[in-house]
Length: 110
Image 1 (tube, helix red, strand yellow):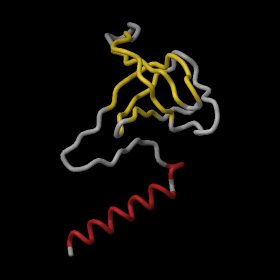
Image 2: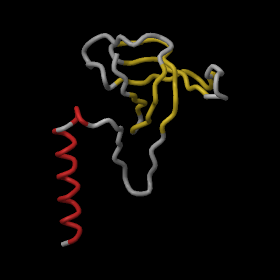
Image 3: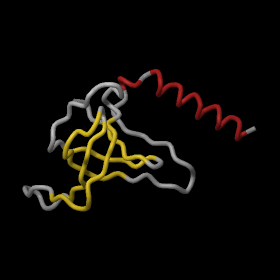
């Protein structure tokens, strides 16, 4: 009985989030118990195709210093842009990257 109520409460919360996205100012990811969600900073290198960008991870140093690129370039999808139109974010834009499944994604409005 308690498990059914918990499931019903979770479904109600998901329905509320879907109906009221304009009021929400946070990022949430649902994951299975025992898993974690990783996020890190990156800088856009260039637009590849539609809303897919080459990004490079960055390391933020001490205050006043420029972030340093580290690692190799990867492709990430901007979920804030339409999937059927060319992306408009410029090179050098900083984003927060999430890995969801086998994809890297971010949400940055142009």
